[in-house]
Length: 269
Image (cartoon, rainbow, N blue to C red; front, side, top):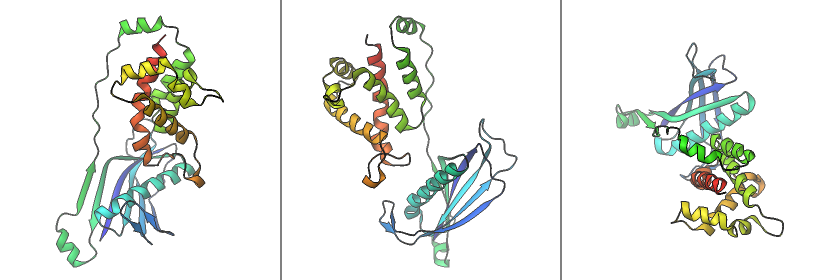
C-alpha cells in the first residue's frame, strides 16, 4: 500500500519554472510516534501552477506531493515531516516556501489486487483544519483617551505592538517577555525568577487577570520557556526550533497570558 499526500504551497520571492520530481531513501531509522521506521523510501513532486492568480505578495502557487509506501495512519506523520523538511530546505535556498496545512488530501494507492478490492472506491481522504474568524472589535475612543493620559514609555509600546504582530510563536513569546524583563528585571545577585516573584506589581496584575492560576508556577515555567526560546543547543537537545512540535505544547499556551499580563502591567502606572 502506498499513500500520496497533496499539500498546497505558496512561493514568495521566487518561482518554479517547471515540475520537479525527486526520490529519496532514509539513511537512518526515524521515529514519528508510531515506532521506528527503517529504510523508508519516498517520492516528492512539485507541481507549480502557471497563469494562476496568486494572493498579494505571493509569486506562485502549486502542489507538493509526497508518496510513501505506508498506509494512511502510518504514513501521516512521515508525510508531514517530509513536507516540513522540504519546506525548510527550499526556503533556505531560494526564498519563502509556505505550505497551507488547512486542507491536505491523501490518495491511497493499492499495490496488489487484494488491496484494491479492500479499498474499493475509498481511495481519497481529506483533512480540513478550520479556525474560527472572530469579528474585529470596534475602536474604543473612551479607552484610548484614558490610555494616552498614562505616561507609558513609547519604547515599550513599540515592543508590545511588534510582539503582538509577530506570527512566529517563539519570537512572539520572546517579544512579550522582553517587556516583563524591562519592567521587573533581576540582577546578577537576583535571578529572573526571584525578581519576578518579589514584584508586588507583577503578582497583583497576574492575580487580577488569572485568579485561578498559580503565580509562582507561571513564573517558573515562563522563565524556563524563555531560556529555551532564546537558546538553541542541538548537541544538548536544548531549545526550540521553529518546527519543534513542543512549541505548540509549551510555548503557544502562554502567549495570550503573556500578552494580557504585559498590557496590564504597562498600564498599571
